[in-house]
Image (cartoon, one colour):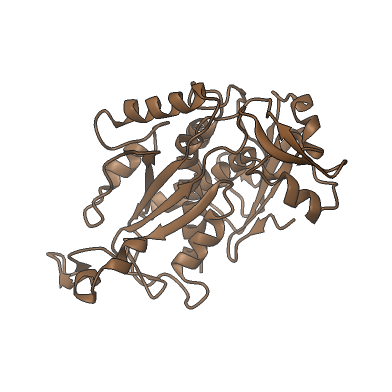
Length: 359
């Protein structure tokens, strides 16, 4: 396993979906920073399961227990370690999957990679349950960043064919990001959430699932951050965001849209604003050029696949008999993980940005 990430700020995530607990150790946090635990719990609640019909019915409190690194609400400089108990597990639902791997899930390749010793219960270490640890780490990093004027927020840009209003890439309000970062199902446009929930419910009733896109924005990052060519801002963000289960695509700024533009359309013209700061009139680059921040808002989007575990009958194989087989997945699963993925993507960004600022 390779579940440790970071250069200046290092995180190590451990546990599995049905182990006694999951947890994270964060090394490199600056000493003396005050941390509001209620703000951590608010972010944990956004990701927590069992909120409504759009998520899994599995209920977990997701209340982290800090073991070290935080004393009287202040970071001590020692590694910050926290564990989150797994209380609501039904492991018998997964006994069949060692023989009949789920299509779309890591069951089969993990079985090959780890000589059939991988923990299959709830997906084990491959489960989205582990993202609770990332949200804890991100909630801590987010508070440190906000004291430096850096704000992070995201929204559900799309669920299936239903699309929200995208961010204005030039004029992103920190207050708007803070508002979105406090919501469970964050969207910008009026009435969009209801339409998205209808898509999710339709998929759920069909014993199916549906995917979507999360759009994230960051304001307040100073120009000049990033270390090309392999430690650029896109590189670092991608390296942690692709660690979020179900993320299958990532684009910055206009992303793949730039392929249909000319240079005169894609280039972002510079100008001095009223305060004498260098700005750009457009932001096709998404706030990053040459792997380095420009001082404009950082904009990126992550494509989240449909949940792999669905109750419809699917084709699979029998790893014991060497024959083809059928599988109906039992257990409790999200018909759509996109709303719960928003705080995870935000948290991944917070960890990565603090790592780069600490440089």
